[in-house]
Length: 355
Image (tube, rainbow, N blue to C red; front, side, top):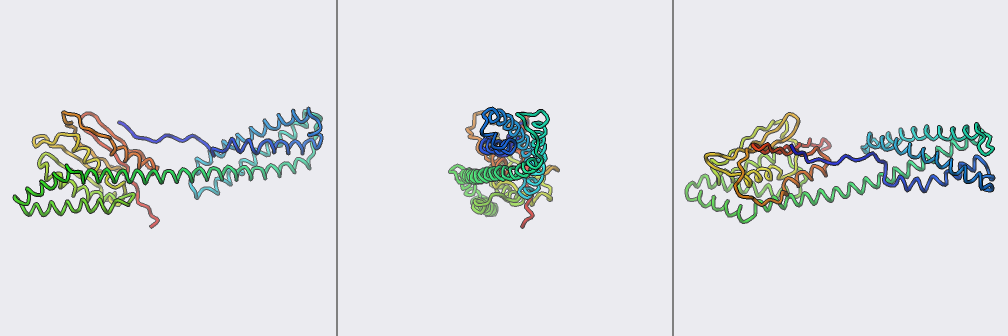
C-alpha cells in the first residue's frame, strides 16, 4: 500500500525564538547583575566579566527550558480557543522555572561567596518581580511571533488550496469538454437518435446534468457525497452508453455518509482514471466499485486489465486530490495496487455544524 502523507512538524514555539533570546537575555543579565552587585558591577572589570558570563549562561538555560515547555503546550493546545489556557499554563511554568533559577543564583552566589556577594532579601524579592515581568514580555513577543507565523501559513495555504481547486476544476472540465469526449458523446447521441429516440432523450438529459454539475461546482471547495454520487451516476450513464456491457459500476454507499463531504469531481477523476488505463471488453468487463467503509472512507476500486500500450498520464488527478487533503489538514488518501485490483481510499469530511 502506498500512503500519500504529510510530514510531521517538529516541536517549536516560533521561528523568532533565537532572535528574541539574543535581544532580551543580555539586557536582563546586566539588570540582574546590577541588582546583585550594584554599581561595583560596572566599575570592576573582573566582576563584570565573570558574573555576566555565569548569569547569562543560567538565563539562557532558563530560556531554553521555557521554550521547551512552550513548544509542548503549543502542540498540546494548538487551537485558537485554547490560547488563553495555553498562555496561562505557560506563564505559570515559566514563573516557577524563573523563580527557581533566580533563587539558585542568589543563594548560590551567597553560599560560595561568589565575588564577595552576600544575599539581600529585599533585592531578591525585587528581582523576582522583575523576572515575572520579563516572563510576560518574552511570552508576549513569542506569542506575537507565533501568531504572525500561523497567519502567514494560513494565508499561503488558502492561496494554495484555491490554486489546487482551480487546477482540479480545469482538469475536470478538460476531461469533459475535450474534443474526444465531446465527439464520442455526440456520436453516441447521434446513433441513439436514429435507433432509439427514447434512449437518446435519456442520454441527453444525463449529459446536461453532467455539464450543469460542472458549472455549478466551479466555485465550491467541497461537495456532499450525495451530490457527487448523483453526478457520477449521470457521468457513468454516458460511459455505459458508449461501452455497453464492457463496463460495470457497483455502488455500496451507507446512507449515513451521504451528507459527508469531499472535493468536487473527485469521483469523476477516479472513474475516468480507471477507464483510461484499462481495457474495456464485453467478455471481460471493467468493474468499478464505489463503497463506503465503517471508518468513514470512500473507496473506489477497479479490477486491473491494463492496456497493452503505454497510456500517457501526467498523474495530475491523484496528486490534486492528495494535495487538497493535505492543505485542508485532513487524513491522507491511500492508494493500493496488488496487481489484480487498484483502489483509492478517500477520507470523507464531516459536515460543519456551525450553520
